[in-house]
Length: 173
Image 1 (spheres, rainbow, N blue to C red):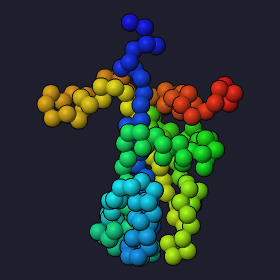
Image 2: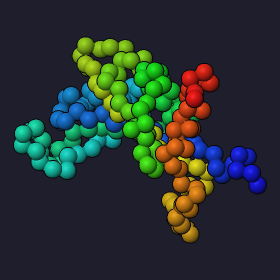
Image 3: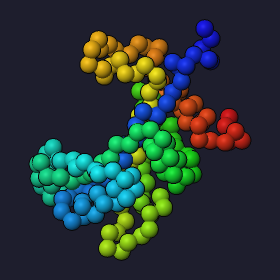
Image 4: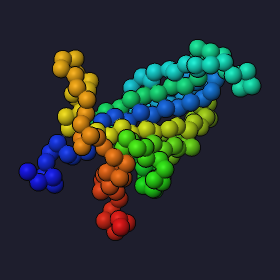
């Protein structure tokens, strides 16, 4: 079977994680969570600090960030909206060796949410996890197994996937 038409070699977006780290708990964190909820339609999960950092005023186990995990078609639509803000340009340093990539946005109002002076402006990080079909074997309950070396996604393959999916033909090399 030719490698070009093998469906198990196709790369897809497994999930999109949006993280909004505030660095302090309280009202500001709740406003950021409300922004994430408006953006995704899902309730965010709060992340706690692992260490106490006195210079920054952070205590251990204090909630300092919120995040949302999105899957499916909704994740692709949100990723496309976020990439429009970045003009579909991501540096090669943003891609990890395992084939995932991430980028940040400084203002959430660029994504189409109306500015509210009571809420303010928040930046957020987008992290995209890519996978191939058959990736479930490492998560399933029965007969767990590891992903083979040829089935793993390399950095160059994820860059090619990004170029083919989001860049028009005239910008590709």
